[in-house]
Amino acid sequence: MPIVRQTWLWLALLAEILLLAALHRFDDWHYATMPVKFVETAVLCGIAFFAAASVFAKLPSGRMATVIFWSVSILLRTVALPLEPGDDIWRYQWEGRVQNAGFNPYVLSPNDEQLAPVRAQFKDWNEINHRDFSAIYPPGMELIFAGLSRCAASPLFYKLLFAAADLGAIAVLLRLIGGRARHADAAWYAWNPLVIYSFAGAAHFDSLMILPMLAGILCFVRSRAATDSAGQWRWAVLGAIALGAAISIKLVPVLLLPVCVFALGRRAWALALSLGIPALLSLPFGFPRVPIWQSLGRFIYVARLNDMFWWIIEETFWPNPHQKNYHYNVVIIVAVVLVSLVFLRNWQRGLLWTMGTALILSPVLHPWYCTWILPLAAWRRVDAWQVLSVTVFAYYLFWDERLFLLPWHSEPWLRSFILIPPIVAALFALRRKPRPNELESA
Image 1 (tube, rainbow, N blue to C red):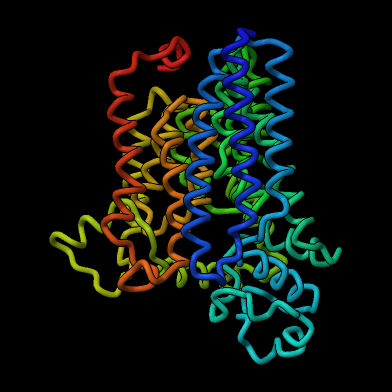
Image 2 (cartoon, one colour):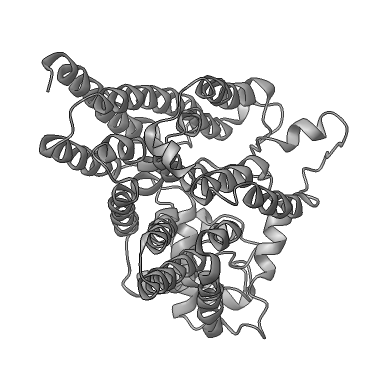
């Protein structure tokens, strides 16, 4: 390696590691000044990440690059483990505890009086969010919650599980990217502070969805590349099963199904498995007799925060003073289908555009939602989403309500900080010449 570039790489990586570790000083948001310091440190960590990934991309590939890539990926996640988890972790533990007590989490909300004995034994009861809503997660995730609760898993165990799934997703991403530059491209996901914080730090379970989602996409690529019919069908079925597992964890990959139909062509019938698996896992909860998706429908209708698009419409000609979602989710479905049709002949890029459309039109944009598209952005090398993954850390300023006229209401300066840098990056990307692998998949 050139000594100058190697020096810059280690300096940038050291800065990212130290700043990521420093987040632990500011992760107790019961103190009013902590969210601001947390966001400042996270953004600086993101800048260090950009410097490290950019320099790493210019270094020669080979065994040393592989060692650096995996060593840094594991080290960063280890550094994030001591961080305070997000408040969703208590909901995960609660819903597992409810199942093991013999109750259906899709039927009873945490506030239900029938669960009083369970509440009495749950010391973190006051930390549970949205206690008026019954379970909103798909059945596959609920079964995992039950298993973890049966083992009396601590928050650290959840983090280790989610971080391990994240490392598995990185391994699949390397296979998906392929070629000599695979480590340089995958570093944009593997070393991303938002990804590391979301799973190993805040203990969000989305990595459990990303891993099978990427595995399904890899299988579809293999199906297209296979030369014999048996191989094409085998990979198509395996991919559909993996995608079904992802949908059973979180419903987001459902949006990719139209694009995957184009990817598989005559073998698209295999995608019936992608819907059949979550339906099968719903049976232990009483589906279809028990409306297990009802609570999710109620929650989606009222949940609203930090959206990228609808605030423009509402502040111009369609006021929405109560921040309800109206028919926004219907618009998302229609837009996803239309985008899928546009990329009929380029399904790999269509996956990125479909997920991006869903995020842009989503009425809610939590930071960890951005992790859904980041492996696809690393695969297709789209920098704007990487920039958003850094600026979206400003979302955590919502915990300092003194900064806002209304709690959880985005002010123009906050929207500008989050959205303008990725928009600028997208405009610059229009002037970048396509790389050889992009031309081959077009």
